[in-house]
Image (cartoon, rainbow, N blue to C red; front, side, top):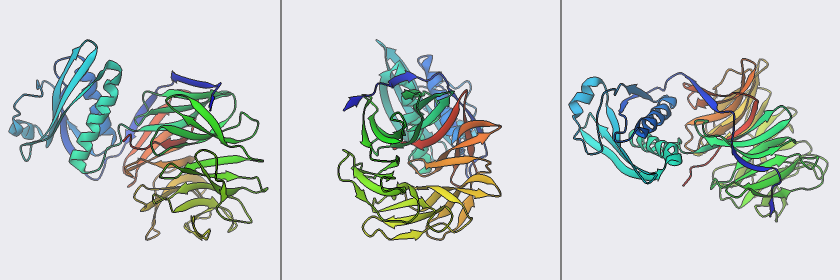
Length: 413
């Protein structure tokens, strides 16, 4: 294992700003009271409010003036009168640099406590804890696991420098995992969230690397003759799908995570690329121009028999399957604009989620409720998120540089 000469773990200078438009089909009215006992309680509450608001599924009810602790008896009728069906509140204390946060969630309609738990951590962990609380609130109310504690990865180009960055799901707390003068593309999270696969051009050609995030250790998993590109992890984390041009034309292979066991998936007379595993690990969806124009196909790993999946439009690329395997996200070109589309895998029905003009690299959130992608807006390259029903859109705007090829990481546990 080689420790990367370029490896850097540092706080990225370009923080991301969140702009949001649209609301969900259902909005739950909730009050988030400041956590009492320490000034950091307001900081924690603000992160929770921002998380829930950003989902588009919650409407915040003003909790100004509320003085509640984790042990305060709650007057549910008063909060219902204020318009809050739900109330989150709690306490925070600090001793010797360690914080204890006790959180509660109440249902004002049924007049019961829905959730309550205590967290401990240092000051630098308060943001993570706030995201965890927001996740619990989201799941208790919607029945769907929250993704506020997850991370995203993307490539940021600043002049002639490329940075592989990871950040919280809200775009905050960015960290540089790799900085290089050579192009970096196609980051892909391992299923356990501990590694990234990506392509680097530092060897004057594309080579696939695996990097452990905690240590920075990295090694080339695919450095064959020709181009090595488009890594995608299998759901069990034991293999990756990659694209090699070792036989003169780009074809899809699988390889073990230690670099052994290279196997060609199928043979095609034209380019096959951008593989993506289905959630059961038994098939790949991929992009191919074997039919004369780029379309998305599916191939069972056991048979090598590919079937076309997309039929709407003459240009469909960059496939991603939802965690429940029900939907396919991809980039489609319509009237000269590149847009993110969603296709139902059972019916073939398609919905255009974004307006373009240059939206790329869709990636599902691990709960399947949102899609992360890169976009050009107002002449600037940005990260963006859209809900799978197309109702809620967010823009995570980088302060400088071009943001490319985002990918949403897995649940942390």
